[in-house]
Length: 398
Image (cartoon, rainbow, N blue to C red; front, side, top):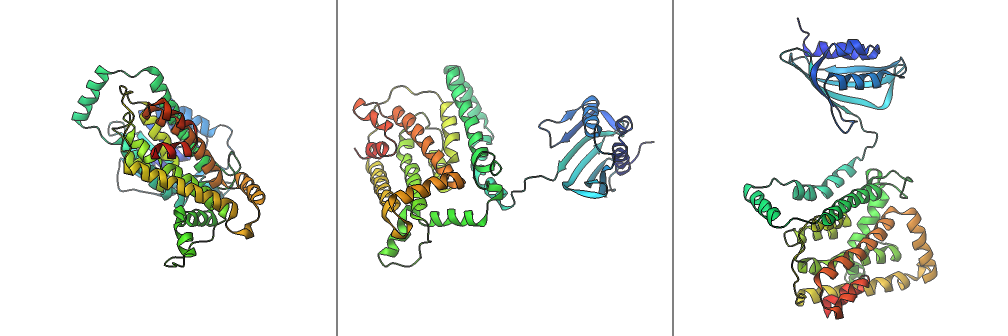
């Protein structure tokens, strides 16, 4: 006679607490799939589960125990469990967990289990921020492919096979995107980057970013100076404000260049550019990765630039000029140019936000070289791609 699910799982936990792996395995089906989400892949089969149980029991203190807090009893074949781990009767920090277990209808033994352990890192509201940042990209990349799209993709693959070099470049860019997100957003304080990551960000840092964003393109400070006070500009150190707006101006003037790039014509350029402009520049590296995996188009003439491109170029030049003036001369109480440069150097060793913007400027330089080189074919203009920011702004105007 087989045990109901709740009794069998409790018996399995008791065997593990007694470090009796052989007894615990008596409750495991030969085809069991055990998903411990601390591990990247599930443990498939009884032998793999045995390795998991053995590893979890070896070398552990005898008074380190799994304690069942609550367990469901309404289903003979499935059970949910709330549990925690304690050492010598003391609950361990981050030692709570929840499990779902299902028994086999044929054998009455554990056929499926999933353990979810309380995370060490608790991003709090930062988790919602991360979800908002990655949701558009996930939707873009994981959207189901329709039958028509699949046929078109197969036809394209049959007619044009991408060189291996392009595929490797795309893969390297995806790895770079992952490294960017981890290092700048998620890495623990002091591991690689200064200050706190997004999952432990302080309210002061959120306020700093918000204040800089409210002073977008210096609109509020300038209107306040002109006597218009429908909304007061937040107080921000002029070096931080100048640096922020210069970086935003650069991604701003990328839009006409992205639209002129024929290679990425199937990508949602405006959507990706908007997310990079208003959320985070992290979206640009995945964009370049997706672009790298697309066929290189046949030679096309240099694009004809209209009013939109020139308006973006002049706006970029205007904002960059204001930023340079703001950096050095606005707010005499913030010191001389030399003192402001010293402050900027200090920010690079203490502020993750400042470091992130510096990294973005490096990537913008590289992306500008690649994209402008792909779009502009005239030797008289193509060299402008090597002049960071001002080369792109000039190209948009002339």
